[in-house]
Image (tube, rainbow, N blue to C red; front, side, top):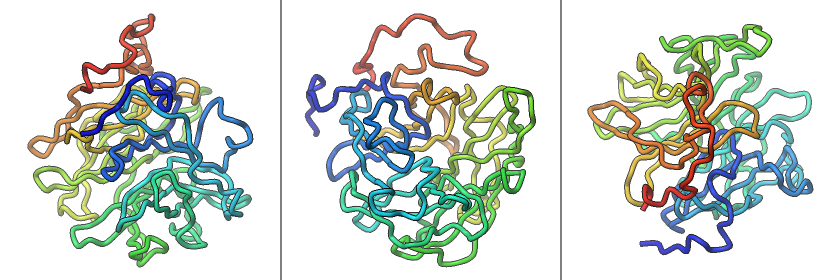
Length: 342
């Protein structure tokens, strides 16, 4: 349906060259392109790569990407929060594009908010002046969920730094995604997962129980699943829970084993233009210079999620954590992976 020249100069970056944390990919039907959002672009022009800018990469095949495009500049518009631009996501809602991310003002707590644009490349502008997450809560990793009645919710993390045992919470939103339309509810806590463990610093100091990167997905059998990330004793991991009621309020039952546990996480699901279910995450969970995008073909069967195959090739020698001793030390020969994706 969509033609693409794999040597076109507007897509000069190979997926192996992109260093990214918390990747979110929007498969936009209107343009037939994939958009990947990030708040970190190594090597970018220092005039535009500040800590208060959000970027997007563009691709037609998930392997070849454009250079980073600035889609939101907080300093340029006098935005209230110019720090902690973390984990941006872009969702299509009621015909427009909405960016949701965390932000923090100097001397304030981190909060989440929706921004709106007519294009997946922005420019994005705040829907409302104030953030949507509760006053006095230290938050991150907001995402959009539409319930069976067509009503929007923001699902987000309540930081372990404030509560010790990190939470995933939800608030109903107004139709324009500008403000909360009700009180927050706690959906789960990090220690609920049997596979999870508190994390430890490199000095061996114990941290808290972490909740990162919630993402809601309605499965083929109608059940409601939520991906999220936490630590195992061996490193960062992705697990998922299922809502016993099929509704946002749960109760949420944790899958006993993690979905991916090789020191990677902050996952999300999307369908490519061939209809395949894919999962994107970063791996390893180390400083930005090593983080890469992994994309997995997934199986949604009998109410369960399973990994079929990783398709970017970044797994070849990029695995860390418990898999580090097993990976190859030479470069991966196939730099494009086209036989997998075509």
